[in-house]
Image 1 (cartoon, helix red, strand yellow):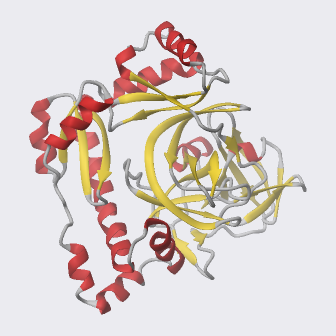
Image 2 (cartoon, one colour):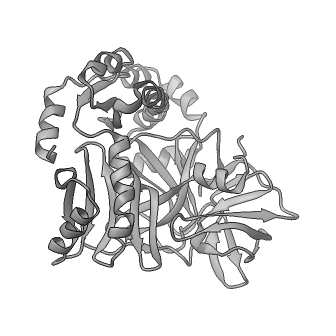
Image 3 (cartoon, helix red, strand yellow):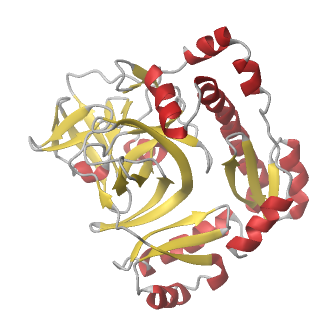
Length: 373
C-alpha cells in the first residue's frame, strides 16, 4: 500500500481521544497540577515544556496518558497476533493500531484505540527487513526501518543510488510495493566520545555515559568499549559488548553502587520505574551531559542504521537531538526506560535525529535486571 493511500485510510477513520478531558480538568485546578508534577523530576517536565512547546499541565497530562497508551498498545499486540501491523500515537493521546484483518477492528475499538486496515502485518515487514540486512549493508544506504503509519519499509538512500538500492531490494525478494525510498541528507554517526546520564571513561581515554543501572553494574552503548575494556569513574569491566549488529554493553562495577535513577541535569534525578516499551508517536526524553535533557517523539521501532563501522538493527528512531558527549545515555518515556543513545545526525541547535538501542535486548544479553526506584 502506498504512503498516500494509507494516510487516506487513516483520515477516513475516526480518531478516538482517550484522555481528552484530562488537560482541562488539570488546568482548572492548579493545586492538582503541582501535585501531579511532584511525581516527575523537574528536569523532565521542564524539558518537555521547552522542546514540545507544552505547558506544565500539558506535559504532565502527556506523561500520564501515554503511560496508559503504552499499556493498551502492548495488550493489543498480544491479543491481535498475526493480524497486528504496528501502532502509533497521534495528537499525544490518540492510539492508532494497524491490522491486516478488518474483522479485528472491533477489538481495537473496544480497547479504546482507532483501527487502521493495512496490507502487511508487522511480522511480515520485520521479516522482509531482516531479509534486507545483508542486501543493504553498502554505504549507499544510511538507514532503514519499518514505518508503521505507511505500512512500508522506508530506506534512506544517498543521492544517485536509487536504482542500485531497488535492484538490491528485488534480489532480496522483498516486494517493491512494501518499500519506499527517501533521500538521505546526512550520514548518521556514532556519538563515540560522549557521556549520557553520568560520565565514565574507557581505558583511561574515551568517554561515554551510563545508560541505566542494572544488577551488578550498568548498561550503555556497545560502541563505547569491547569485552575486557576497563571503565573508570565509575570503575568496572566490560563483560558484554555487541557492536555492530546491535549497540549495547554491560559493565560490571566493583566498589560503586548502581542506583535506579537518571540524572535530570537540574540538580536532581528521575526515578526509573520500569521498561515498558512506548509506541511510535509517543513522547520521549533523553538525558546527556553535553546537552542536558532533550525531548521529541518516537518515529519508528526496529530501525536499521548503517554506520561507518557496520549495520545496527532493532533501534528506536526518534527526532530527539543529541551531540558528541551524549552517547550511551538514557532514553525515557516518562519513568519507563526505553534505550541507550547509539548515534544519529544533526545537533541540538538546528535539530537532529537520534537512534537508541532498546534496553530490553541489553538486559537479556547480559542476563541482568533493570534497577528501579
